[in-house]
Length: 54
Image 1 (tube, rainbow, N blue to C red):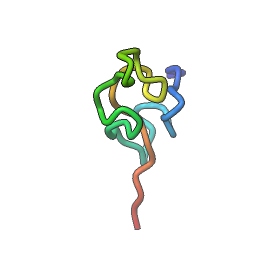
Image 2: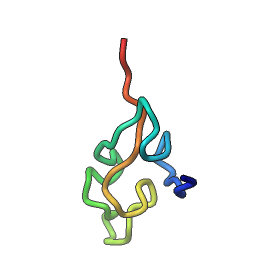
Image 3: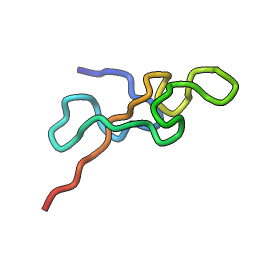
């Protein structure tokens, strides 16, 4: 799929064992305190991360 990843992403969307979560840097707003897009999530407010099991 080769979707560009944001710095906060741990995996590409759709990767088995991963899921979407609220960005911890902007708390889901997609913006930094100065109003610019969050660099961690690329302004989306969410990141892709590994979800544990077992």
